Length: 113
Image 1 (tube, rainbow, N blue to C red):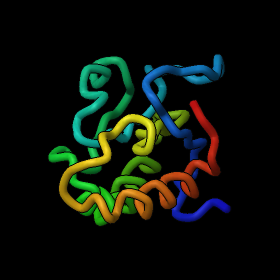
Image 2 (image 1 turned 180 degrees about the vertical axis):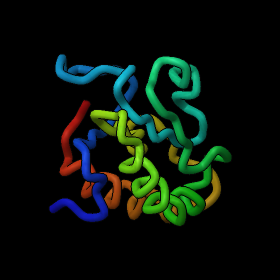
Image 3 (image 1 turned 180 degrees about the horizontal axis):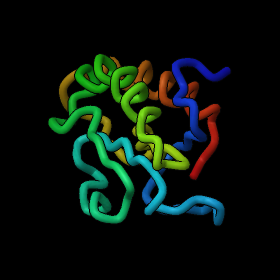
Image 4 (image 1 turned 135 degrees about the vertical axis):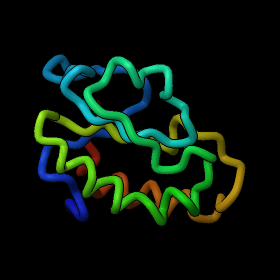
């Protein structure tokens, strides 16, 4: 099921860590539309796949962002914004929302943080 997944454990992230083995300070956070920007100082590395909140932009940048995340050698996990749960169902490229989520789901193998 994993497709274009980083070489480190990756998880769907909805705002809180529920897996006690995960820690913000050793994670890469891949955000969407700045939803989790307030956590930027808590994580090891932070990147936003679409700072403007465009599903189309996120679809086009996701694989580059995933490749970037796996080059962070000091990170132990990748947390990827669970766009179906945290992003509003509106905005530019809404028709690409499900495709974006499908790619994120495959990259995380459906595992939740």
